[in-house]
Image 1 (cartoon, helix red, strand yellow):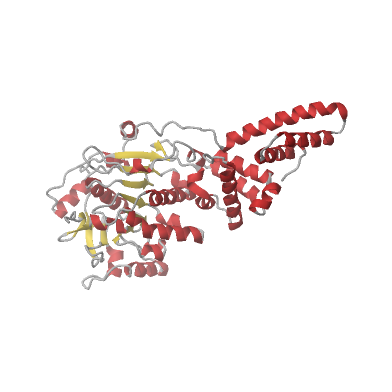
Image 2 (tube, rainbow, N blue to C red; image 1 turned 45 degrees about the vertical axis):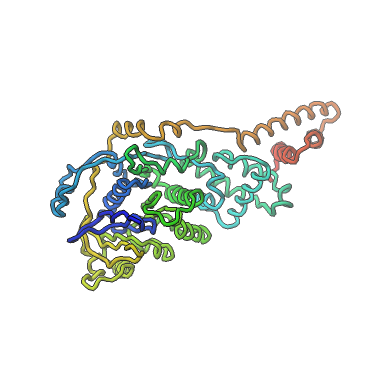
Length: 483
């Protein structure tokens, strides 16, 4: 079997790079701010695109859009081309699709509440274990009642419905604390104020649209606008976790592919591991360990390799370490720990080199054909062929209009789901209650008796359990009770 040659990422007296067949063994790009991590990410993405591998990355600083245009005119790029003797270097633009959870700088990215699931939603809402259990119960009730949870208002309506009918649900589903219901409602309101309601809905993202190649066979580079999104780090991290989990669940086994199906870059990776629940961390570790068999390569980008939990760090075979600062004892400890993550090279003092490498220079170690890390080398990163300067608004709009996904995601769809069904049924019950109350009002002057009789009459007239639960929730507000 003929294997693709290594992708030339860095150079000493020879090139060093990722073997395509080992690219799904994951990787790490680390280094302090301003040391060149973003350019390294760009160079990797370009090479993957050239061999037909789609890429997904988040543009946290807003400077990756230039991948869509050819570059080569930047003085630093010219200088690096000359210093490395890259006689065959050619400026090049790449096929790009822009995405944006807010729908401003790219195609809207949406998923449904059901697809997100209670585990990730609990992290997004910052719920404690008891509240997470109640949220899981809400999902179960929705499933049992045949109510679709598509957007945020569906979930809000469902939480209210369960809270209003807690007494009836308690026997089947367990205790439902009013305090937990209230906490979930407040968390949902806060999430809505952060703009997350735009993320939940339809049309939901079809993962196949992230796995495209252009007419010449180059992999499409999917760029998520994250300069605004990163201001809400919980939403940013949860979205990326959801996306990789969906890839893991939906993609078939790939065996031992000659190159990955897709490569996924986690920028600001420390946000993924910022005090996550143990169950979620276990899930991430499992996904990273197993997703390589689906042909997916995951590359974490962070300032310090110690930002990544050991159980995950140990699975990252391809490593590029830019400079780390060592001004304090804590910094020095981090440098020593980072040096110990590399396979030793007798000709290189790794701990010293980590603090000395310049901008665009790094310590690199890649997996060989047998999956063994190569001895660490100090090397210069090859220059990108695309434009370093971001696109202006007109250029970005043109790329978006020419996108291979067209305008499919640009128009939101609002199907009948839990919110609409619960609202319609509640309105119907209200009409029946009012009608019954009016007919009974001739025989009694007691408001309490009127409503009590109306409740009994309405309940008798509705055959389904859901109808009875809706009446209880409705009449609870009439009596001024909180459930």
